Length: 83
Image (tube, rainbow, N blue to C red):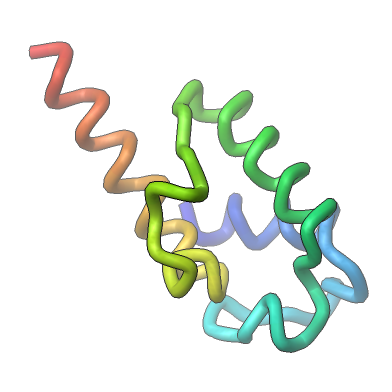
């Protein structure tokens, strides 16, 4: 999951070619409001999940690793609710 999120951010983010999984995305200027919306749309489309950014603490969007963990948690909840 982390590698897929990293690839998305490299495609969407600003100057994101050389980022790592723990690099701060907002402070480094890799994510801005437009890139963030694009990222949310891609995550929603790719994994068929609906993540409301206002319902998630801002620190969960700080780096690739925490975003991947968030998506995995949402997917696990989605899968668990279907049982």
